[in-house]
Amino acid sequence: MIKHYQKLDQSFEKTTSVFTKILGNPITFLLATLLIVFWLGNIDYQTQTINDIIRDYVYGVSFLTLFIIQKSFNHFSASLHLKINELIATNGAANNEILNIESKTEHEISELQKEYTDLANQYKEQI
Image 1 (cartoon, helix red, strand yellow):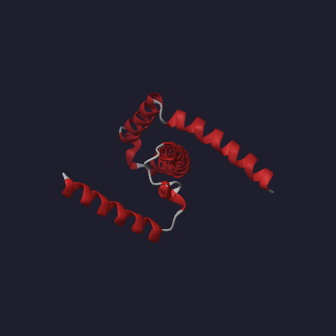
Image 2 (cartoon, rainbow, N blue to C red; image 1 turned 90 degrees about the horizontal axis):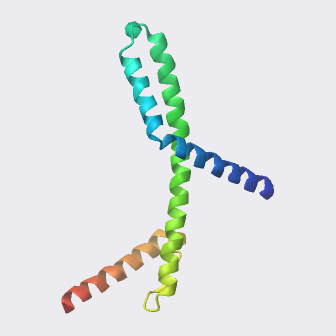
Image 3 (cartoon, one colour; image 1 turned 120 degrees about the vertical axis):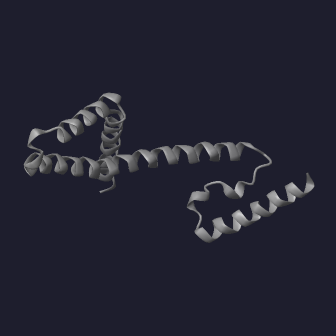
């Protein structure tokens, strides 16, 4: 079961990578803009059939794009967390308590935030 999930996750990762490249391409934006211009400039604008078809495609693509954007954001966020954790781990003066802070509870994060706010206030008073 885990093997199937890993294969599914890898294929989803590849798919989102491809779609991110396609959706982030200026040509795709140009095609979408031309589609909208065609849609608005259509002589049969009063007949809802072409508008309904385009609307359905836009809704479908928008819905699927949300998943692609979320997957890309998750990948970016995980990479950023790793980079920050590396910087914290290699800095001797850093507080290692904040390593992997994303796995802590909201209460633990709030407590750490209060500590750092107090520390920042103390630093301001010294200057």
